[in-house]
Image 1 (cartoon, helix red, strand yellow):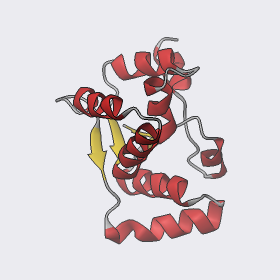
Image 2: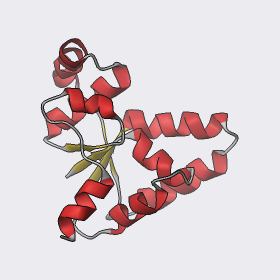
Image 3: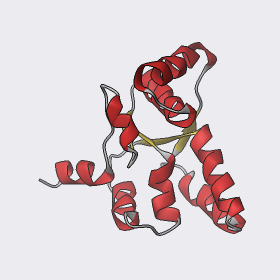
Image 4: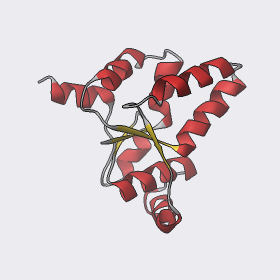
Length: 135
């Protein structure tokens, strides 16, 4: 089960370098994926600032269909993970938030952000997961 970092979905939405592999990952059966409420709203902020409000609405409709992404939040009883991640691994707020959710829900972080490699759990990329499944 994976927690998709904001940059994973922006790759797809903005048709960046890794868009094709992100799409393949999302279409691979058996990948249970979550997105934090923080990432969902950060994507909205990014797309609104680029004048792509319609893309944000389409994204939400497409991604949150039955069997699609699930939004999760950091529960107050796990806020200490956020502070711990920031203090112990030098993560900024958004990365610490992702880390705290992943830690509290036993999820693997899927990201292109190497800051997560400062943590013992590290992160994985869609390429790494797809290579494991098809080798």
